[in-house]
Amino acid sequence: MPEFWHSAQMPQLESRRSCQKVACYRPHTHDRLSIGLIDSGTTTFTGAASGPVPLAAGDVILIPAGHVHACNPENGRWQYQMMQADQDWIATLAPDAAAGLLTEITVFRHRGLHRRFSAVNDLLFADTGIERVEAEFRRVLHECSTLPPHRRVTPATETALVARLRPVLDRLHHDESNPLLDELGELVGMGKYQLIRTMKRATGFSPVAWRQNDRVITARAMLRDGRSLAETTHALGFADQSHFHRVFRAHVAASPGAYRR
Image 1: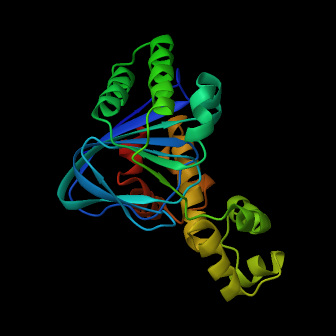
Image 2 (image 1 turned 180 degrees about the horizontal axis):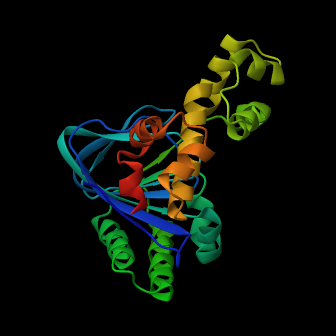
């Protein structure tokens, strides 16, 4: 059972501890910097332009906001932690580290770094005061800027194409209905099949998958703010709570109710 932490006193941060034995994540993105800690077992990171990236116990991976990815266990049990931090907060907290950590996906293979990030996560789950959390976060982020990475990974998304598709993405984000592909294509002068190909190249998602991922990001924010499952389901245009539950679980590997607690 995954364990989640989020707090109204520190809305710039959230975290989870989890253990998985089977493939559970479909490709997804986050609107925050994700800091993944592999505690035991092995997993494969997908979402890099160069192909899959194997990760092992002791590895730390930092994934900037907006980069499509998925990690699923290899050969049995995989235990991990994932902290997510608002990138504007990171840039203010540790500007020396932010420039390098908020642009590319970075993998570190330093056991000491894993231990120090894990200690920061322990502070979150212990509901330690924000001053100490910020001090420890600043220290470990600065350490990241001084260590040689095991690997830097070029994201699979293409920012120039994303900019061209902005009218489509805005429509998918704001329209509670499911816009027709023909209508979406007209916004950027494309046929529906060209739009699908371009969306996948630009974002890693088809239009439908992009919309589902976007709604899950919004749903997480609403649930962290204490909104009910019924209110979130209705506000985001899901057919019913069962539909919301299936889509949310596919992206988060946990139910909305477990995440909200």
